[in-house]
Image (tube, rainbow, N blue to C red; front, side, top):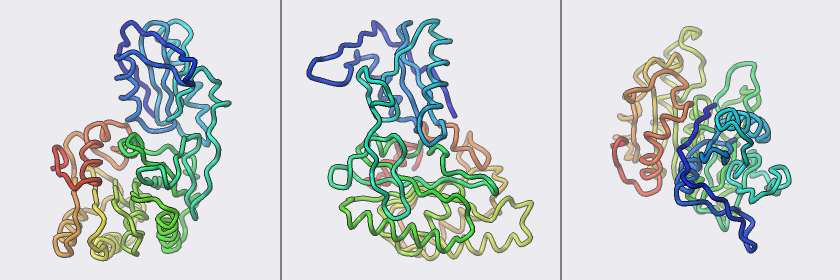
Length: 328
């Protein structure tokens, strides 16, 4: 979860046009809103009476009610006056109550479901589909967890956002197969591009589905893991060998970004070297971000700082193959 006053909004004025349901922002406010669009859902953007724009992002939940409640409280504590909701997730309210502005539900795609309270365009209108697969902690239901901000560059550029949720993770081959089937269905529906993105167990299942032949165009794998913490493993070699099978089994086609952080208690070591060697041998087009400076721990990408630094170059590589700093 991350809360932040985006930036000062000079001479803030909200004009409700008769022909438009959405408020028009000043140039400064528009820049603040563009920064907001690079945050993870559930997220809210608020206009304060003190002339500033505020946001709250990364709240979990089956709807954005927690983000709305906490964001307004934060904004009003800072501005010392009542704040107005301008947007919830990717929906500009234009003066409407946020609940009344809820978008219509979109159908599931196999075992994929649309991100809750998200304006989805559909396969013909969207630039593509990005699928978020969450991490997992044994005994905890993570199906209402918030996506990480790596997805935001894609949604801002016209991608629909769906989720691959697994309440309990007991059947890895079955989960990977279900994700393969869902990607094939999405392509058959008309999505021109499909990107898989995930963290921890979600990164692993995204890589495993790609190995099993999912027709994806890109994969963002962050801190891939599914064997638990190293200190709890009875056989460390198994986690390493199964990772080697995955990366060696991926064929050229999709562009991959594979990320691992220092001091990751789930990392048995050597896996980024395994990925480099496997992709060099197979010809897979990949960016390997091994222990990027300034980030550490299994959940290092959860704060949003990682996406702010690397999100744009990850998007550029997945979309065009361009290797720009700091991804280069």
